[in-house]
Amino acid sequence: MLIDSHCHLDFPNFAADLDAVMERARLAGVGAMLTIGTSLVKSAQVIAVAERFPNVWASVGIHPHEAEAEAGVQARTLIDLSRHPKVIAIGETGLDYFYEHAPREVQKTSFRAHIEASRQTGLPIIIHTRDADDDTAEILRDEMAKGPFPGLIHCFTSSAWFADVALELGLYISFSGIVTFKTAETLREVAARVPADRLLVETDSPYLAPIPHRGKRNEPAFVAATAAAVARERGVTVDEIARQSTENFRRLFTKADVAAVLAAA
Image (cartoon, rainbow, N blue to C red; front, side, top):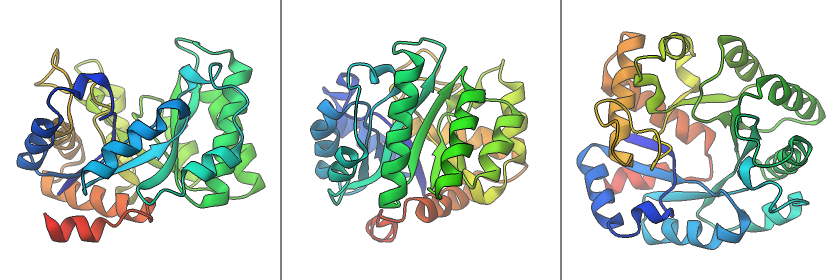
């Protein structure tokens, strides 16, 4: 079984055919999904999707693009939302200096609040970083020194240096369909050398459809193509990537009852 560790099933792109999307995922061997919160005002609809399907979990958090619109978030608010039984993670959060839809200092403050919520709850933090690796690394090192917290770098597109920083801090690394793009040779090199016990796969759907689905709406079924690409780079079978990434998901997201989903599959 594969698990799509990062998708956005509450987005309008899926409103018309979500049941069909879920069925295609099942047929592709994708047995579970984590649908991701991007703003607190939409937390209820993210959680509602997870409540609708037994093999879907949710996270709660504020994407860096939304950090100014929801400035001043406190860890306590995130902690309160995370008490829902289907919420297994904090985020996504982090820093995005490519678009800079929110001021950098506002993004940093929000990021640190999410880290504090992760530290207090023990739930993994889902980290988005784009064109901001130096500041992301600085914050992660500073916050980890205050007390440990679990987490992962989602949709990894950074350098080997940043991968090493994340791994040294005990974080996991998740690869999206970008790893299949022709221009992503450096990323494939990172995917080939990440320790097997720190590796996850995702779609980030509805965005970033992998080859051979480029140009289409991405959906959880397509994580199989990403897993196949990672398997090729690592010289292992797709079944091995499925087994290892599922075990890694279970180890990281300890609140998720993966065993029950496997038993029901």
